[in-house]
Image (cartoon, rainbow, N blue to C red):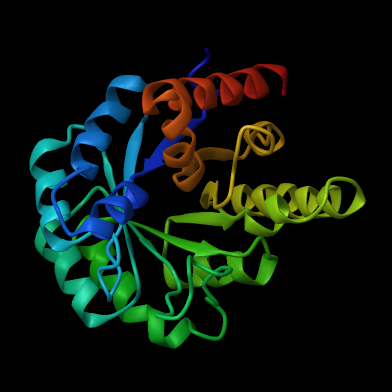
Length: 248
């Protein structure tokens, strides 16, 4: 496929760690899953180190940095603790996400407008360290403009609402919102990624958006791996993305 039309796939291994932590033992190993994902065609690996360490733990990040040849996207809240960990390891990328202890998973995008002044030093320090900073935001123009103002070179558009609404007019409206946001991101000089909740039946319309250069997918792939293996799930997702891009 033409390099300009290629869309990258980042695989999130958090929920391999969720299964491991349920028993408090070493198996299954998220680092092993990351290495398998690399062999299956992933372009990068995402791992979210939460404050409560509910899935990924510090040793996982250490091992991913040491053993992984693919770029690591370190998902993190904007806290001093996570900033210091990112600065110590210096992953390829750091995606700043909202985080609440009581949530099951990330609920919506970061508010880069209201949180602008708070986020400034975190973005600046990470960028100055050579880490490619992205902001996980809702597909809204004011959030994209705030990302530009903050100096973040990358945004990841939250696709959760698009995936959760019923098929039909509601989903088409959400898809249009993402398409408009991606086009605006490109217009203002942001590299545009997308992710959250994407599955085999929802990925193609997002992958077909020309301005989006990377999708980050985790929970669905790990769940699907139970039935057909991680390699098969990643290869099927990769094929759906490539076909959508080719037909775009």
